[in-house]
Image (cartoon, rainbow, N blue to C red; front, top):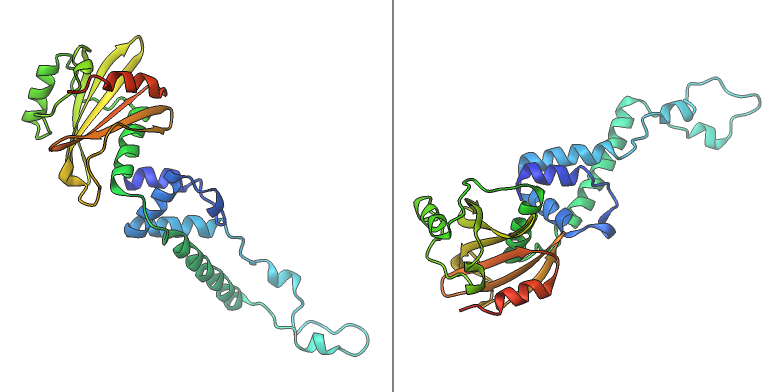
Length: 249
């Protein structure tokens, strides 16, 4: 997730929403902890949704106002006027409390790197068509990966070798190259296959074996080989991906 995407997600955030945070919102909040510019923007966004008592001076009597008929009460003698400096201090105090609240929200442990990677890639293909070259021959796709610094000597399940390609791209995740190509799975249906070096996930227990997880509108399957971690996205149907991966080498 980049700062632009995080800002779009955080624009929906309202102070006090912690009980309804979805994984994407939690990831955006975590990114704001480490991105100073995003953190400044987010603080301003939250402050805009905190109602400061700027009209309090109009509703609280001033100590210099004419006394009402009769003797002033003790309460009247202790009324403190809220001038602009006082209102500023109240606003600052509210913002400090908000900052403490946000820090508590941000202190939740982040998701493991592999889960973040999987969700990022699966959501990417749901938002756009991220291919950079319109190649259909899988051998040419591998040549493209090799020429552009992406993993290319990976092993693809035999069941996927028969599908024509639907474009390819080399992208990065945490400065690591990711090879991605589409597969024409039928009318208006593409599979997307991602390959990244296994050393990217130093804290991830391996191997991963046919791990299925739904991300948005897609089902994903993940597994690892000797050198790479593989991710396949397809229709929101576990059985379809299970059948495709049953023929893995």
